[in-house]
Image (tube, rainbow, N blue to C red; front, side, top):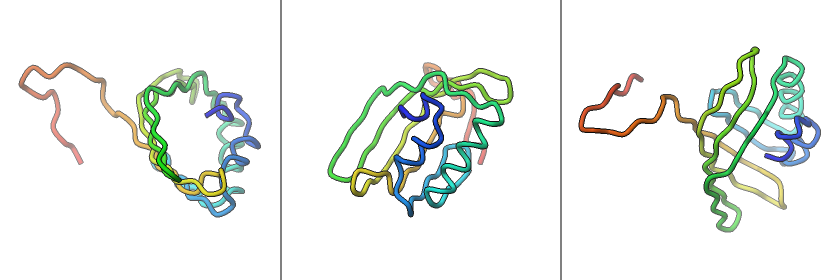
Length: 120
């Protein structure tokens, strides 16, 4: 998270294992440290900026981690934020596997009727 907040592709790549698999919440899959670095460089070069990434919950058990967070960035000239969660596994202090999930609709208090149903 600190590397993304610093918008530093090299630091982002240094946080993952050589043979990592990273699955972002919006679909892309990165396999290997060099691909992570390349995609982070492309994202930044395309105008991607991380403004904030705050943890709201974080659990570590052995080599496994789970976290909930709020992410704020600018992409394609639009500044936005969303809530998400990450499940990860580490080896030797580096991220080996990581999968993100995100909230896709605005949150609201349920009063007995849903605004939307599952669409997929």
